[in-house]
Image (cartoon, rainbow, N blue to C red; front, side, top):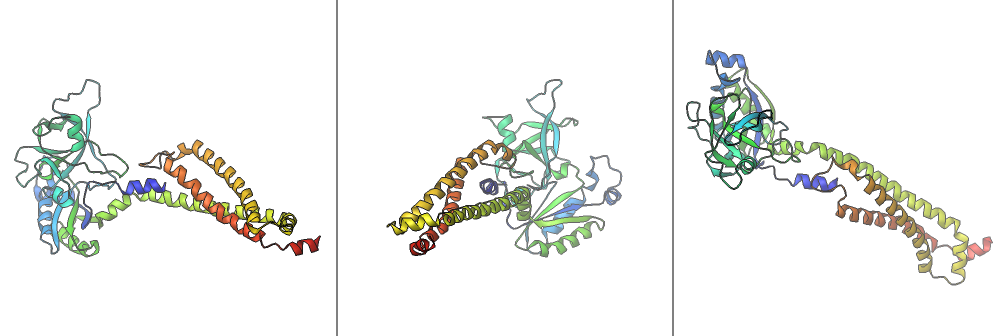
Length: 375
């Protein structure tokens, strides 16, 4: 579990999390409709005017170097899948549609989060609702659907819409659900071309979230007094929170394991101490007829070694047979990881040696004279 947690925390989430503050911002739909008037756009489309105004005000804040808006930040635990048609990839009758992850973003999203564009271009301010419908896909989608070729210029669309969107860029994979889940097929579209009802604002700044929060709330209220702001935190906190469950599991089971190891060491010490007291007469006689202290220690340690060898062998067998219990708790290592199966017996042998050495040393201090006098 420790090796699994270490492997999990070393996974690249696909973004540069340093100096980023995130906050969920949700405008009031009634307020949006009042501002926009009659609207036949998709749900949330009536709020299109809110988000550009918010982005402009946030970008003007002192200490803020960049601003991006998105429907979902990486590792926030959410995922929105849409049934999509993909050019040259028809779906057979009766088969389920292609399900792709969707993210509506502002033009500065990739730059602020440090997501490299591998081919083509990022979104720009020119990608508005009146322009050509465009999308950007991740590397996983491009590699699976067009292996050995290029995704640029290909098209896809939601199954319920008549208009195809052209792929204008390919970006690296980003993990959105959790670190342990591999990237899925995902695409990005300009927020200006798609209605959304809530966004996560991402601010790039050296200021801590506690300093940015009051300014953020003030600017949101200036655009829409009824809008809500919640979950203000750093991107590093988001990344750490995504590993909270495995960290808690590892800590809890690790505490029980440490207690078991401690009880085992106490048990070995107690058994050997009792054995030494029971053999006090034999040890005294051995020393009286010339046994050296080292020989007496070796005698006790040999008995301890047999005890430890039997315990380690039984423990390894039980661990091997019961390893499947940990299948859902490990990442990046096998439940029968050879490094673990080599390191743990060595740890137990070391603890057992320490626990047995103390009774062995005490055995060499038995006075043959006192034993003979007792006899």
